Length: 97
Image (cartoon, rainbow, N blue to C red; front, side, top):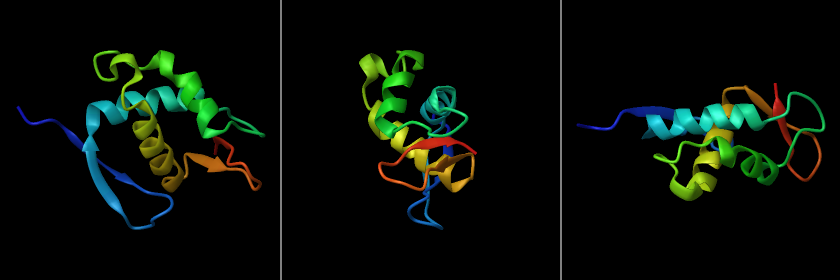
């Protein structure tokens, strides 16, 4: 049986669309949105990754395997879709839009 795919966008490469595993994307998206704060100052991508690891299903991310890549994939897609926003200063801090 073929794995379900979902198309994701990339905030840093407008117009770029990639197909990724839908089950992993959806699991990471749910955990990511739970970990992203709703207001300023937001959280760094590293803080978000640390916070979400406990919410990932072990069958998809055994021991947190590949979580960093998937977190970045979801981050860039959510930014491209306007679901989360970056703050104006460095370092990058994210919050819900």
